[in-house]
Image 1: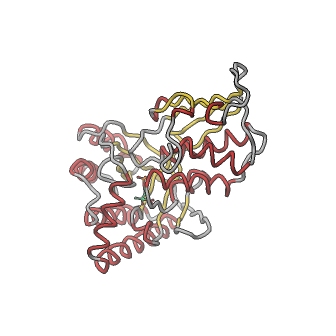
Image 2: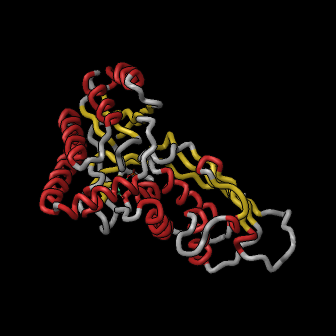
Image 3: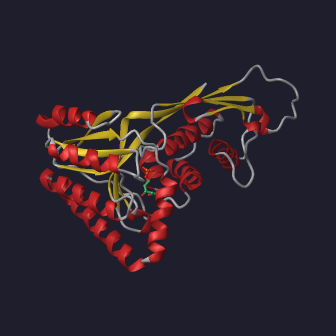
Length: 320
Ligand code: PMV
């Protein structure tokens, strides 16, 4: 039996603009995770010439998939789990034995916390290790990125990168991974709006806006990119007041991209009124999670306020 775990993630600043080449900042969220366990099945039924699809079964209740892989769509629009497994087998050039794969995840789906990428990364690592050929991080990241295309259409690659390398990243699409330093520890509250939202849809809507008015959208993306650069410096020097203001300005620009929602706006306003230094939606938007930068003394107050304003779940994560 072989297991692997991958963390959730949260984007601090720069979502959407990152798809258009601007930088973004993201961190792993280790309170959440996906674990994949691969077991060789000794109950292997005949026939021995069964295809790999018949030899592998999946139990993944949290992502709504269970049963023999042969029942999952493959071909031109495959199920993402089947795609990951096929990619690993192709990369390793192995014929798998009879296998049972169990996926357990505490990361809510469609909420901007990297559920899909975490399941992919854990599955790639568990399966390749179980087959005796553990893949290197770069290869894991490559398969996870190809799989993200199935979830998101035109992903930047930020989710799979932060989750594969499990460290804070300053990310620019197509560039080598860079991390960033934090001069003074700080705490973020991550609050779930309770509204599931598909990143694929918001990314497609931003693309439509961009196609209609490229000049204006490029300006918005560049403003977001500039906030990201300033936020990286603010984190390095421990200037949390500035970091908070940059986050809140990033939220306003995301509103301009039409990816916020009444629920997210309400949670952002609530956090600010309760004393947060800054707040914004995180990830694809339209629903999912928002985050608030909060000083230790105000954590309880802001958390209570977010819950009273309708957040289903609030978790805190510390950086630095
Ligand atoms: O919804 P999430 O957390 O998976 O965020 C996606 C981030 C986007 O910038 C909106 C898309 C991308 O691929 O970078």
